Length: 254
Image 1 (tube, rainbow, N blue to C red):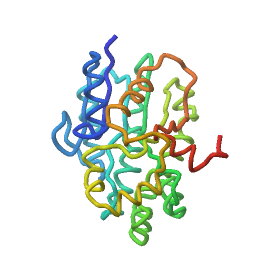
Image 2: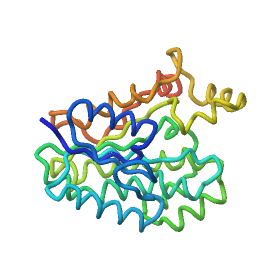
Image 3: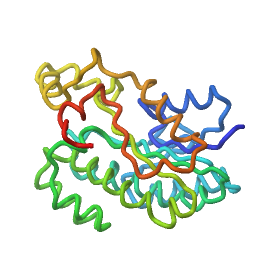
């Protein structure tokens, strides 16, 4: 049966691969991105998020069956924007579209976190994110820009764990989970592979048991499952799809 799925970050990378996979399976996809998708919206701003929610509501007034909060940036030189998009944009997407999900008989939501979520992060910023203080979080992140990406993804993973078990999510039958991809070959990561020092750094921060980095289509396979699963029991998990990185770095963590 065809399902209606909203995908943010749908114009490239994991979002585009997921959209293609689900369309091929016969599902109706509403893509969101800065440009080049069904809905153009800047999820780094409150106005852009509100416009996205309004546009999706108009496109699917009867409700939606799934959401992939996949829009994100690498954070190499834009710490404020990284927090605004990767955390607040993702949370606004999930919370803003939850009423439409509630209309579905089998609603599912997925947030793209990252193995970066287990790397050192700025706890002050994480706390501000979870408290909903966007201005404060962005300001604090600007003071320690090097940690913006792992901090944004750690905060998002914490949000998923906390929100997923709430009455308005799991209690209402809406299953929310996260995924933690390792290094994936996408347009966002392409510049990193052009810098020998970054390849060396990735090898240290993302050690792998398998050979070769992931393709976006491989991550899309897991997202496809999470957005379409029929069980009512899997919620609040951040599932690492990382070639073994999490197991290598945290062998004692269950």
